[in-house]
Length: 107
Image (cartoon, rainbow, N blue to C red; front, top):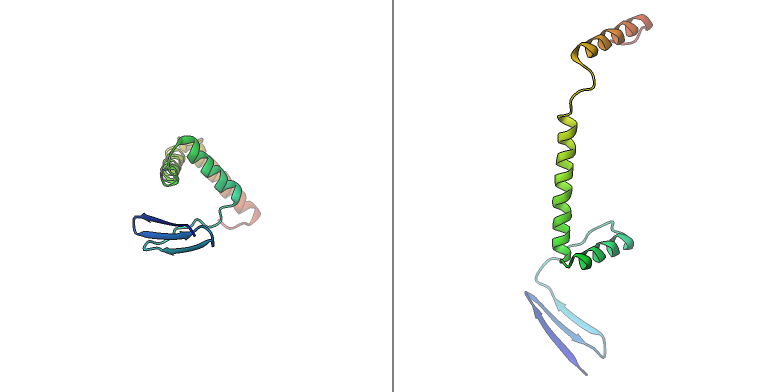
């Protein structure tokens, strides 16, 4: 019976290759991502291998990129020049008010 011992950080792994018994003492927490299907997980692993980075670094890069895009998206929306001038907006407001009064809608 061959036995392999591996020490990594706070983890001790004892694996018996013949009987497939694995004893694991884990001092850390295990992190999972819920709702990830096999295809998406495969693509993520493939990107990690292609770019020669760890999964952690790849996820960190994805999160940073998402934050940048989301921030720039809202900046574009909130700082965008209006399509109507103030005069056109006021005229439209008066027209809507007139139609509401004419047809009995709330004002």
